[in-house]
Length: 376
Image 1 (cartoon, rainbow, N blue to C red):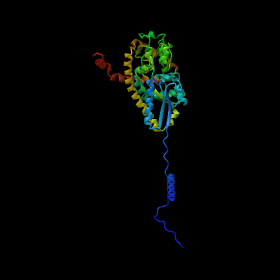
Image 2 (cartoon, rainbow, N blue to C red):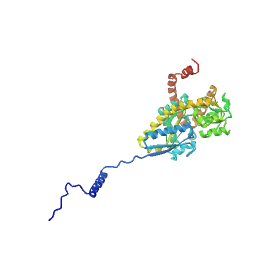
Image 3 (cartoon, helix red, strand yellow):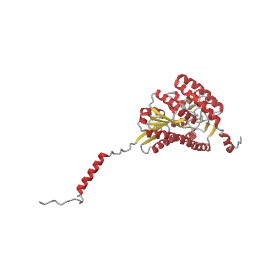
Image 4 (cartoon, rainbow, N blue to C red):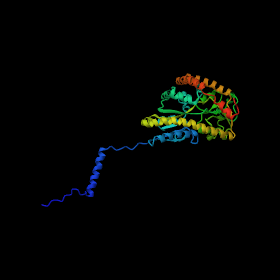
């Protein structure tokens, strides 16, 4: 009987080897879990600003920080005002989920609850914009804002950031010398400033930013305020009006708001929520520094262009404060949350303002010494 030749030690044939490797791969797949591909989430935002405004640039700056830090796991895309909804409808759109989020100011929601305008409108008991943010983040303001949104059934998460420089009284065909010069003027502003200027005798029209200059050009309004030298220049104010009054209490402590639909934000993992939180803080610092650089450049450019700037007379500023006191007294009677916000701001401002006023040096003394020839 013939025996089969031994194959021990000989190389396996190619088909046999292929079957062996396939079997080994299958066994490995059964014992080692597959690594899931990282999910990427895209959120659609809209700002309340025209694409050419520096404010829309600030919105994009925030989005870029989130996108860079999220390493592809989260992307925020920002559309300019009007792309999905008009500027004043942003809150509703974010609440409903029509938009995942947005960038604007709390005063734009004034029609929902008058107390919302206290984050920006008025003198804030002498607090500057950064102090208002300090009150919001550490003095109870955030909890109050959340309470107001809950009371009007807005399922959103709000982040405030970016202390704005004090806004001008506005752009006028003739300089304002006294408070009575405001009487009868068709004027644009927003928030509680609407009520303040009405108290001063103006006929107020709260237009969104992108509609102001066309309205001035067509004579639908006589005068207007928006925000700062850069925005005003980009939006075309100097093309239609040649006089700007600087310094005002109507919006001396405003900041920006970044809104998220609460369900969309809560669906994100903790690490991405942390990215958003820190992006807000970083954007707040960067925005305040960029504003100094850009606003000062554009202020100089506007003066070279022939725009006349005037300091708002102290008598007009005092008249604003008188009007403000009347407005808040009336609103507080109508709205308990309004009084609650005022009380919180006042308590914080009394302590923080005392500290700041006592500690801060008068920087004008040094500036005047080196640049104005006044060696006080």
